[in-house]
Image 1 (tube, rainbow, N blue to C red):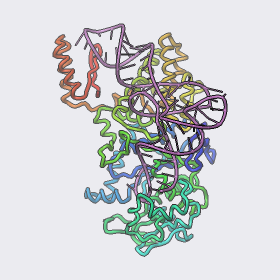
Image 2: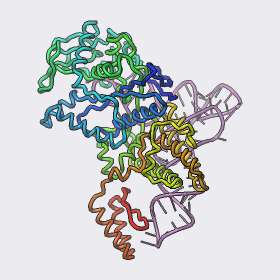
Image 3: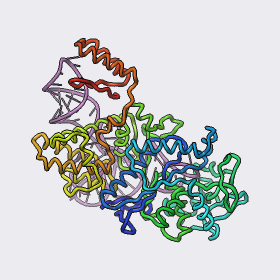
Image 4: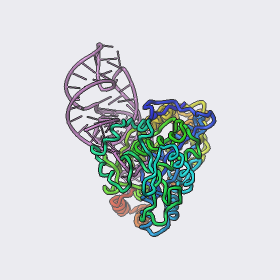
Length: 479
RNA sequence: GGCGCGGUAGCCAAGUGGUAAGGCCGAGGUCUGCAAAACCUCUAACGUGGGUUCGAUUCCCACCCGCGCCUCCA
């Protein structure tokens, strides 16, 4: 049984499938105009953990996550790069997939693209216009009339008056002076008429050439793949307003039915205590993390190590902490495997979505993750369990008990998506210069020239890498 | 201005009406050519002021500080 906070009702609710067959989820995916940053991945990672947890719990999740491949940014950037929108977005979609794979994020069951669902979007707009929820402006753009939908603002608890007056009072007031002629500032665009800046990006519609507005695609694609009402809708906290609020308005205006039963919003990732942004130069991608010598799995550990409703503060120190912590789990599992005569690689057979009856020392870890997806507490409980386990291994553990613990850990690792012993598979980049210095040092050490060896080790360390000797070889790690 | 979130050890981060998980770092020890890694042990915390209560870090109020959103944003 999984309980999860719901943004709409502001309560923690039990997750149940409304049709008793599968649990239908829609998550807002990336806009593919560049590499996704680690903040984006925090959200996708948490959605992934939720999905994995549901699988183990037997909820049979069915997930849809879209790709936004047409909007102002993708159009602008593709034109700057001088390539077609489709080639441009494909390039970044591929990188996104590669990053997801390295981060061990399961693929959604369906990953629809906005540009492949133009017809569905036009259909929705047509219905909205026919029923007077939307109007066509003089330039051929179509707007949703917020005043026509009485429930508008229910997700973020906006009241009507605020919506009207925020032009003068809100910090974002300047955003209202744009080129579109809306009847009310709160109204949002469903269809954008073709502008010179759009280049050759346009589709033909009953209202002339143009392209769909951003909010609409999620309504159209979720309806197409999940129906008018589905179980859970997720996204970053910043999407709450206006994106999700708008989705609710559009969708419920058309269907007359509740849109999503449950809303799952993830808090933002901060960097060094503040907002992550390009201009501050603190926006990291997976590439950046790997260039610092950390594996994707370490990043995964770090990004799920805090509770999803709490902003998480990313620092270089916390990356180190994540690395050591992950290492510690691997060490215990390795010891445990040794006890049944298995190797690291054989741990995989314990990692699956079946929930073992006996959770061994890890019952509390499972409770934590089942209760509002408390991954932070879950990891804490795993370490507590590991401590008991380590003592037991030291004292001598029976094979059957070892297997119970391995199965329990395996299911937890599946839920968290922590792929242990992945370090070798995902190669860490070590500069050639460091490799050579390390080899020189190793030769010196072998010939018992310790002073040369130590000097070289210091030099390597001053360049940000450290040497770990084993009896017959050595490894290089990031400091 | 509106809405919302938070302030727990050096850092990160759970949680609870009966004095508080876990990780990192640090210290000591074992080991090692010396280190590192590993293992063992240890230290240390609930923003301030009131209130409710037998008892509050946990509930309420005020204040201080930090952060987010307010129609680009995971």
